[in-house]
Amino acid sequence: MAHILLVEDDLDLREMLKAILADEGHHVVDVSDGQAALAAIRGGQPDLIVSDIIMDGMEGIAAIMAFRKLLPETPIIAMSGNELYLSNSEKLGADLGLLKPFTRATFLSEINALLDASERQLLTAGA
Image (cartoon, rainbow, N blue to C red):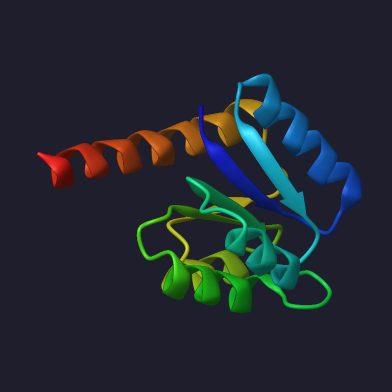
């Protein structure tokens, strides 16, 4: 399955989302802020990044802009309880904004859609 970088400062939510992804067979690296996420990227390129927007330290918008520069083809999902933040994140590099709270089914559906689209893009580029 996919290698997913999960960036979320709320420990309970991060652990829940990590468990959901792990139950689906994904390998998940989870961190609490943008700086830690950038360090994790240096350890290996993820297939997908899921990032909160409002976090201490390096917040999500700045992190998403940095992710996009480093990994221009990697899909990014931004998460927030604020629609305006999600709209801005999509303008600045996120492929999708996911409004909190969301269901497990919605979360997995969006993850799978972006992973499938990314895989199709790689196959087309390699053909």
